[in-house]
Length: 345
Image (cartoon, rainbow, N blue to C red; front, side, top):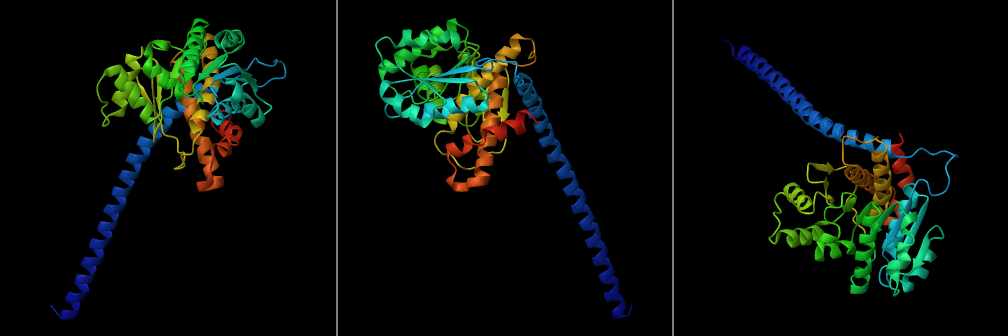
């Protein structure tokens, strides 16, 4: 065969092989694309199912209501060293949709917290000799309680917080425990153990301390889902939120993962936005459950998933505007639009 014909034939074979290879690569890409998209669609489907439950708990806005009907939330926390945390939690509760937000703090923190916003009702009673009695008289008016933001670890304040939790449990009030409130639970787990309207929101370090206090052995850091499930069961099927790259939420029966995209910014105060909003959503979810509107899932889990989703959405939106300079104050400004996008669209 002449040399030029051989060269031409070789070129044809090379082109044919290239076409076949390209087709196979394209086919594989389609297969992988279909595989991964089906997995993510399935996950999104589960998230959307839970978010639809959250939507069903949101009370409608109507002119026929009176002040306080959509929620009166109390924050137990705020001392000389920590005034920002209770403010963040309380103002977030208002921004989410509570009508009134009360902060029960120490005397030296009260004026500072009041100066942040006239929207908050601030009670300078947390370190008074009759603190429990002063707070207890407000409990009949409260629909939800958040314990821990800016509480500090002084024995007197922790003792008061413990007694207020006990009084609130007796009144069947939803209770979210965060920050230094979790330090109290680590020392005395029985204060909230088994209370089905209780929610704990530990970060990794807080979770590790609590896990080891209950199990008296190191946590298995290779399987967070198993660990959070175990701790929830040990706490009497209490709802737990392990905050992290993905928020793991469980009541000891099933672990739900909230991985709505946030950002890489981790400024202080985001946990207070979470706990404050969760206090409101817990009230709404349990009220909806009592009315028979939620039957398929623990209302505390519904509230926790909703608050985690909202916090992440606020983080994402604030980061898009401010980037590296994003602060929790920026995130709080996003609550209205984030809430509308997630729960009212």
